[in-house]
Length: 239
Image (cartoon, rainbow, N blue to C red; front, top):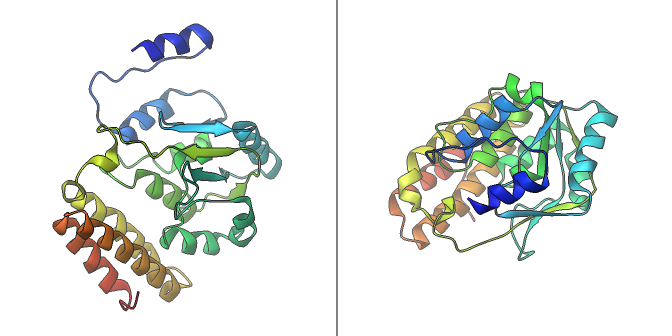
């Protein structure tokens, strides 16, 4: 499209074009296969950045020798659950703390993460079968698979809550109930081997319950039942 033409005209970039839309996870895997740089990051069309976001992430990776970096992010409304502010980072320094936060729904957007390219390839890139929660899954798996992490305080990613019919979140949740079950089953399996299994399951239960309420309110009863079942399996429903 015209955006691609402008990009090529202004920047020395290589364009990899998908003739058929197969989802962001497969598009990112194609990009991951094509890059030749030491570090890799991904930015969606509904994201914009402020400050020296990417410079800060690369410098943090170089300085610490870590394999994945997390940077500040927020929604454009400034009111979203799950955002990562600079003040949150000190509490998430350990792997266990980060996994617990992730299991509770405090996930990061892909645009606010960067990896050592070889490390992201080593864990297999994106799960091509997932149609929802791809960002949450790749970040959680990066930590669960043992990638060392660090934080950058520079810049910020801002995710724009747009109303386009093409966005994934506009699709009925019922269509993605299998993907939801796959994602949460993966976290449940990891929780079984986590030193803080009870706390991790409790956090997972609260997250699944919040999403179940959202699904039911939007009329997605099948997805709501799947999520409610996950919440019940992992904790007492006293929310």
